[in-house]
Image 1 (cartoon, rainbow, N blue to C red):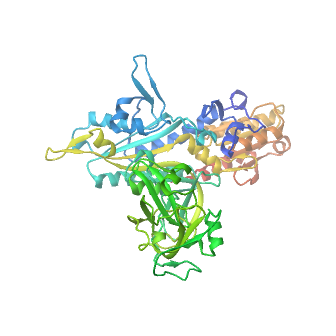
Image 2: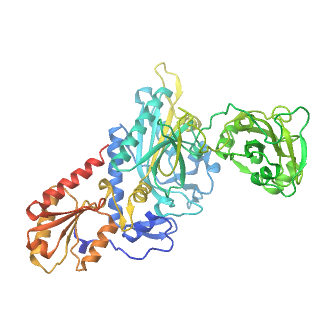
Length: 579
């Protein structure tokens, strides 16, 4: 491919609305152009990257036994109403009506459509297991699209769905997809972690997120330094503590009733613990939540934070939100900051950390007052204890007791064990060997195509631009003749480009009449992994240069060996991305 005939308009300026590295570089390198908020044109080089990601996805999905289909982007409301998600999904679901006044949506995901397909076509256990996948345009009407392809409204996704006869088969299908995802991201040259995660709006019994490790990641993840455990912080487990804590200065657990003390204007954990001269870990923090199952008070040690996802899952609630100031006053008779479980007429659940407090302090449900010498199980009785808090750096690994490491990650893939959530609601059934009707067991598996490309940039860039892993780079080798007017330089450039092209290498020949510095800057910006430079003096002496974009290492190579050396470097880079 010749640059002079290729549409890849690079720019020096950084767009003002580009907030993250991948967004800035994809716009500057001419890979994307904005159409509307969260909606983009994919330019030729950007589309080449996406197609390479898609090729890897197809190869690994096919190798895992999945079959490709293509489902409609426009979905009738009836299917979503059958699953119960039409009203529950939220405003991200773009709903509209056709000319006959029938309701439709733009599919953000296709559990309903694929379940409808399978219930129409699969009748017998002999047809199971079956896994179907597609690579398709999706739309989610994000409230605040940002970060380019990291959180757009329109995007490409690979979504796959498995149907099995029983849980044992579903576990095997899940493992196949999990293993395929590991191969996919290794082939893309990415440093990633598979971590336990919440199932969210998709539902199901369990899931894993595939996170590309990057400082710019939106998600916080934890992983063990001693074993394979990893989890999103929303899902990370906290072990039940064995030791009990007594309030410092309170003399430990005491007989009798709690004592009320004045705490004028002291609301926060830091303010109250300092004022009372006690360890924050012995404060019993009381948070009021409005949920789909009613008002709930959640108790946690002052040393920790409540995990709303865990609370939602524990309650089996559709939603959980922190109560506002007015509602807190209605429930406790006091402003926020003074709530406590003693005498509180609200359903109460407590984190394990509260159970370890032998004698503590808490709000008195009265303005400017707290209670001390409070004993859990004596002065208040939660309906139960559970893991309801965020993991902290002091927590041990819940699997082996090892040290947990905290890092940032970009979610690029997610696999779910759905169970019968959709198949039961939509009657996706089959006949077993005895002719008895049974419900299929499902799994679903998604990868964001553009998001993965953007995550690769977040993980692989420097001050000069993108540093593509060769498996998803728009081109593998860039050839730069420094002076087009020198016939011997152009002839050498044409020869080496033709030689590499004949070996199946993707070559990008920069035949623009531009200054050498501009060509070099554009080569670094666009991130082509291998660069061949042919200058007048070097060519006259029978040499050319090869530069590795990732390491910056430059070698002066005889012209007759130039193509061989470049090809060898390409092959080594490909080997680095082997699964």
